[in-house]
Amino acid sequence: MNKGLLFAFSDTDFKDPIDGVSYDLSDIVSLSYVINKSTGAKFARAQLEDGTTLIKPVHSGDAVTEIEYVIPAYRGTAERNAIIKDLAEDPDLTQEMIACMLNISQSTVSNVMRG
Image: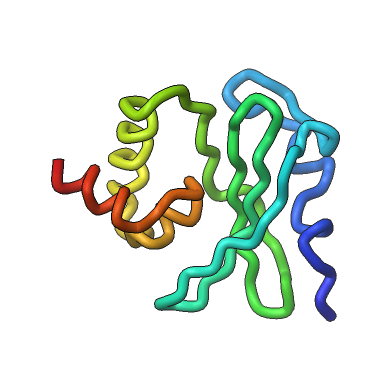
């Protein structure tokens, strides 16, 4: 049964502080699905009021696991580029996935990686 995007995140995701800050569902300003076009992998993406983004994998049947990636709020290109480089160290992430997670284009991720 497809539970939908609203069921991807719950209060329990925010009970433990993330980077020393506690959040709750009211801090979410946008929700979206991120889909890797190459592999079909699906992620739920929650953008919080302070700019932090939470990413959770969504498996077949819309079963959701724990938060897998926390992308801190960033101000400016230099901070964003540092986050791109940090995420690129994960061998399981493609440039396309990083782009979806940050809501930017794959070509931007590629340009950052090339220097």
